[in-house]
Length: 380
Image (cartoon, rainbow, N blue to C red; front, side, top):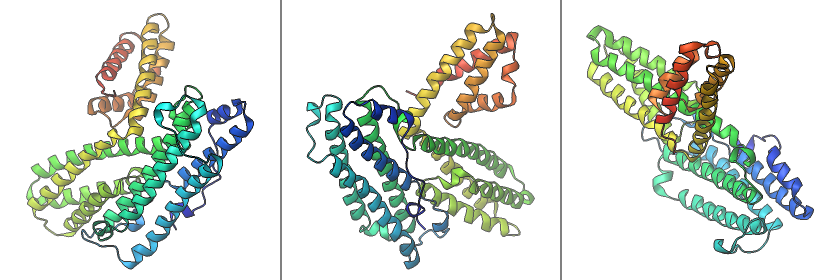
C-alpha cells in the first residue's frame, strides 16, 4: 500500500493560520482561503516520505521488474491525484490568471500568488510524467525510487512555500507557525542528521581499527561493522534517507555481510569496503544544506544566543537562574547535533553534565565555552 493510500487523519491548520483566517474582515474570502489551506495540508500529509525498505535490493543493477512496477504504479497515480486535488481547489476558489510579480502589493494579491503556485505545480506534474518515461530512470530500480521520492519532496516544498508566502502577506509569520506538517518534517531531518553524524563517528573509528587489524582480527572487525550497520538500519534516520544514499548503504551492508560470513576474509577487501563506506557516510552531512534545516538552525542558534546572554548576565547575581538558562540553551542546541564536529563533542559532554546545578567558576566557564561554540558555528 502506498503512503498516499494509508488514509492519514483529516488535515488541520496551525493555530496561527486559524488566527489569520479568523482576523480577515471578508468572511467569504477567508472561507475560500481556508479551503485552499486545508487542501494543501491534506496534500502535504498524503505526500509524506515513502518508506523505501520494502523496495530495497542489494543487487547493484536490479532493474524494475513487473512486481516493482505493480507496487509503484499506485504510488505514482496517487501522487498525481494528490497534487491535482489541491490544484482543483485553487482553480475553484480563485479562478483567473496570475498578475506579474512586480504588480503585487500585499494581501489583495493572494489570489495571484496562489495561481502562480498552481502553475508551478501543474508544470511539475508534467515533469513527473516525462521522468517516468525516461529510459535511464525506468531501467534502474533505485533511480526510479529516487525520482518518485524527489518529486514528492518537491511537491511538499512547493505547497509549503505557497502557504507560507500567502500567509506572510497578512503579517510577520514563521514557517513553523503556518506551514502544515513543518515541525514533523524538521524533526525528521534533525533525526537523520543526528543519527548519521553518530554513524560517521562509528564508521571512522571502525576504519581505523580495520587499518590496524592483525590477520586474526579481520573477521571480528567485519562482524562488528555488520552489527553497527544493522543497528543503523533499524533507526528512523535510515528510513528517512534519500533513495540514492540508501542504495549505497544497502550495497555496503550486503558486501560487509558476505565478508562477515567468510572464515578468513581478505584484509584488503574489508579495508576497501570500509573506506568507501566511511566516505559515503561523511557525504551524508550534505543534509545540512537542506533549506528546511538552514531555517531551523538559524532560529535555534539565535534563541540559544539569547539564553546564553541571559545566563551570563545572571551568573554572579542569580546563579540558579543562570544555570537554568544554560541548561535550556543546551537542551535546545541538541537539535543542532550533526552540524559541526566540535559543537557535537560539546553537546555530547553537555548531556552528561547536570548543567542546571552548576555554580561558580564552572558555571561561568561552561557558558563562555558554549558561547564560543555558537560563535564559530556557520549558520548564515
